[in-house]
Length: 456
Image 1 (spheres, rainbow, N blue to C red):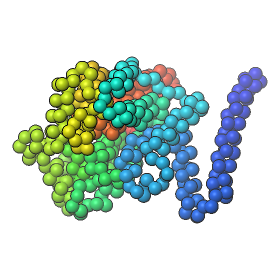
Image 2: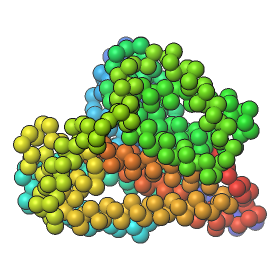
Image 3: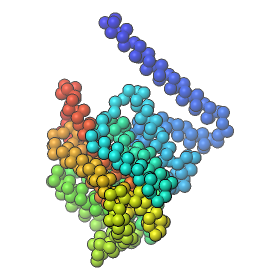
Image 4: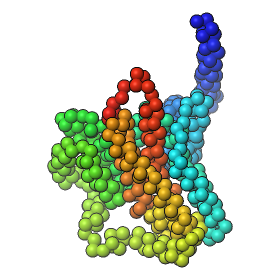
């Protein structure tokens, strides 16, 4: 017994020393900020809150990841942008990387990336090679740099941050909380003439955020409650539903409809909820003062006479991208070449279809790689959903739902860098696979297995 105590003592002392140094360092920094600088009470209070938030994000980087996904839809507000002297996306990215490093210092394990992710290596190689013939080298280099850094974080970080089911649930909690705040903020514009927007004045982004929040509640909470208790969540669901309708985001509405209908194959009892929600919507929506512009834009899904009129300006962008692909099928026009081959670089920004964007700028081989990545995620997601006795079936369902939304969004809006949530949802499917594998390795006497655990 003495031997065992002697062997464990150095480890305890090492942990104690590390914690002591961290506490002393944080205390010194806080003292310097509060007493050495000329701070007003308001700035001092904000600084204390900022320090506490920073420590929380470093200790729980899954919350930083949740904020990172939606920060672009928030930082456009001048009040939010003024909180820091740096770009908020870069600041959160730095915090997220620091949190990952801290996890390594704390000897927290990561989960392995899937073999399919090796396809990113040739994709990046094609991007780099395309710099030799892209029409504007600086623009191509900037787009490549953003993909390697800003976008690459959401592709890679989940494997280092969401390493346990509890961390995954905290991420979903964080994303849901921020999404709810953004949706609630958008409702302050009810009664106006324009469609509802995020703090960054983004209608499409609001639709995506509202859609994600609805699906997290729909799959993460609702299946595990009796009908009467599920009704208590109807007012909460009403917030993102009104935001989605008010945004007029057609892609998000289509994706939500597809996933909700698919959920009936897993939960037949949701038919009663859909009927109640439909009746509630018919009662609330007419009196909610949703802008008429939102209904008119959503109405184009059924009122348009042709596909071109439905797509509006996107039809011209898709047509132009298709022409570029036909003229440069093997190697494309170079990364960011879509914009600078066009007659108007300000109008022709990207094709609003990620696959077409990759094909016309990098060639058909690069497009096949992207198809292989998403095809692997779809196959993996289907495999998880078929395992009805999985201990993490709820997380698998949420990941599958978000992947479906990401794929629909990728076909009608954004480019490979602006639509970061699609890449994140791609990674979530494989992260859940690794978590399921970890659960399968836990001895039965050490864990209580539940068929469908709630995220609540």
